[in-house]
Image (cartoon, rainbow, N blue to C red; front, side, top):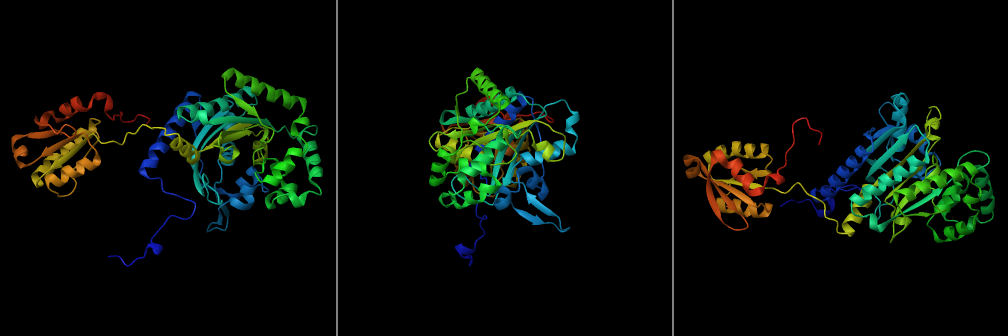
Length: 443
């Protein structure tokens, strides 16, 4: 018996978790849906490095945001350079767009990503320190129809995943950085909060100077009361931004997507302009938004490129899975085994190895030749694998070039020729259930 106590056994760090096989069923299905819908819309997949120079995120996200100031995993490499595990995907995507000269491609460039991200956040329901994001970006064109299409893409993905009925789209315009738009609002917003600092939570006291718009979406009760009486951004939006926002809403109407105009949606990153949106759980509201994004027309220039419009969104895989489980969504699983191969003796094991390979090559999911247990023990193992069929091979069967095919549910069995084993098993499980792919095929 091990002398290692339970307290000292290896565990995952706080805020991260293993993606166990049952969880992978959901994760794999979500990735498949994401790839399918993005390919339909002309998007191509991009993966950025797990870590980047810290400057990418400081410049791209904003040094005054909570992510950069409190939540990034930053370290010095052996060369003394500051590196950061990516806390979100957009900044890295824009860096890649610039570094690889994607402005020479037909515009707009449509990209999607499915990657883990890292934030030193307080672990709680729906929040982890390593989590996974679905991400889409359209870079190189400003058109309200693009904003609407991206929202519709997110909505279709949620429909495919079976949780659209518990979600609602909240949308807003936060205007632009021209002198007759958002800057005037921010100035008046700061003036409004002067003398009210005592009523703000600790986070908002720091945001008042660095990122005052974040005060409007704080979830603290006292902050919400003050935000309700604050100047309204909609009263400051310039005519051009109002027209753009109205066009987005009209295009959403054409798609038939229900939405709510929510003046409290501002998003937490500095780079957003014009359209911002979130998909909220109807029962939990903003506390459990599964998808969020918006337009960021100034980010490419901020990262060192020429002025280039862009829009995108990100969705949290862990929150999506939590909602799917809560709604009892069944996901297809290709991990179920078709056949277990039981054998007795070395000669039988040698004979069954090429049989197993033939079965697998034919698309029949097969396990067998496991250990040296008795036939009875192997049959109990087959029950645990929950296989519908078992092949049984002993020394007599080897000599006679035949094998027993047993129906595990009915308890019936028959002898079949080893030469015909693939064809006979396919007859039983059905061609439609084979797990096949052509070498070289994109799967």
